[in-house]
Length: 253
Image (cartoon, rainbow, N blue to C red; front, top):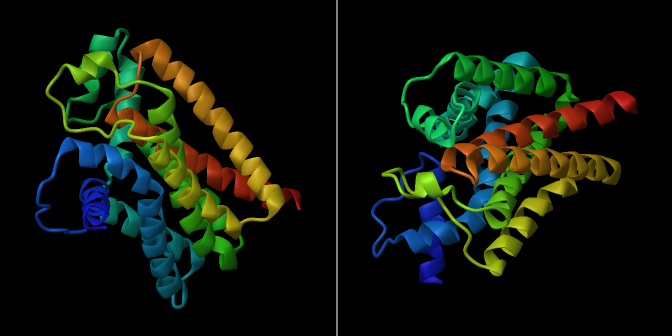
């Protein structure tokens, strides 16, 4: 149990700005195992967003409550996934070889592709959430953050770490661990579907699987594997498509 707590704290340390102190006996193996808690981190992040939405929505308009809930989730994660998405846009938008893509993604500066991509994804999230039934927004925030983090885990287990990135001095990236870790992530992320109607569940799961399938094919063709920025980009894409699916189903009802 003590070791499992350390693995969970490792997930908190790498995927949020929540202080956890020094983890005794930390190793890269713990980081790999911590991928099982990726959807749990989504529950925490989405839960914070939901609380902020409830609090702000009681005194301010829905649009401001949505905007500030998004700000809260970004602050909680240190824009971890948004940064990965921006780097992904810059790298894959401006690079024509695997070496050049990785070089651009490792640059701390944000370029035109990253700026446009990040602004677009944030705008779409805001507009989609603002049009969801107000009473459902907190639950959709939780489900969106939790479920969208399942698919990067699926990518980790269905792809390989990019060889070129693995041979360079980059920040640690979680890799495939065990079947238990994969199943744990699937179950903990899948519980968020209880917030949805069964028709929404079918639509969301189908769309996100399709998005992940084409995304995996694209990054494999261009980079022969995933990197940390690629995982962050997939999380952002899945979160956006999740909100769009919820809104589409609502408008069809």
